[in-house]
Image (tube, rainbow over the protein chains, first blue to last red):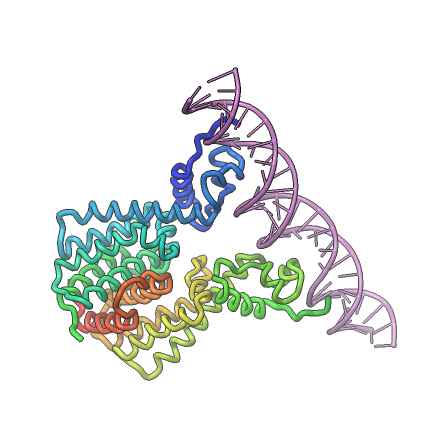
Length: 189
Length: 189
DNA sequence: CTAGTTTGCCTAAAGGTGTTAGGCAACTGC
DNA sequence: GCAGTTGCCTAACACCTTTAGGCAAACTAG
């Protein structure tokens, strides 16, 4: 068979698309090979193994997400920034469910430290500059925001809110209001 | 081989233990057969297929979790109840990570409606009786609590908070304080 | 108590995924 | 043009899933 022009980056991108189509845990080296019209073993020159492929997809998703977040945060502060960041996560998860799932992959510490995960943490912290929080409350608040964003998005995507009445969009916006109010009025110990 | 005394319930329980040991997505019919010292095909008389087994484990986890929650909520209200329910989720996830992951499995609508998931929703709503919220804010608040609990627990288990300074226990308790404050002072539209 | 039925686990087999080892042909640099 | 490298291939093995059909133990009825 002729040269298919495989390389780690193309495989990762195709893997990300595959994840969005069939779900991250259905991403398989075999299916990827099929899409490139290439034998399975050929992929192993470019990617260490299945786990390596998944990790690359996860890192890609984290990067994309961080890029979107950085752009959304530019020029905004306080509640404006809070809503912008929150919407980046939610919209990304809706547009790219497989990639979003990938971004949740547990990375080993070194990989995590080198990933865009640290940018995410920094950006969340940056939002809090618009509120009057000092350490360690700032860290507590960062963790709260991360929990709410991730928790809400993952429950909404999982259909957890689908059978009940009020619009999820309405809930989302009320939750952002509530978080804003909470951060402006953070309870002291 | 002699009778091993297999049935769906024993398989489900063993599957749940296996999940806690090796992770929910590593739960395999083959490994389960090995543990019962039985051939793989034998399991298929008791369980429809691998997906069916996973679903049963998920339902078991949801039940266990709901039972714990019900017990924890008895006789408590307001912040006391809030913290009790939150701790049930967190503790369960720590004691039974595989089961907790299983509880997150996406169920088809009929299965979900018949599951203990509805008890969870009711209990979360019950907590809000201790606060002064009317519909639709009550539903928004239910969703917020679900998001925070699930989001925090899943980030903490995934190691998302492990490389930073303040104790996660401290953060957890401050987040519960913050949620209590927020519910007591829910922002009107 | 025995004959028929059911139950419970088995063997066999086929298909899919993951992974490694080794081969051959096309491209690259000198 | 030749040597080395690159890029994809075939072959083979291990493991998981699932279905089909068999056999013997255990139950049930008369």
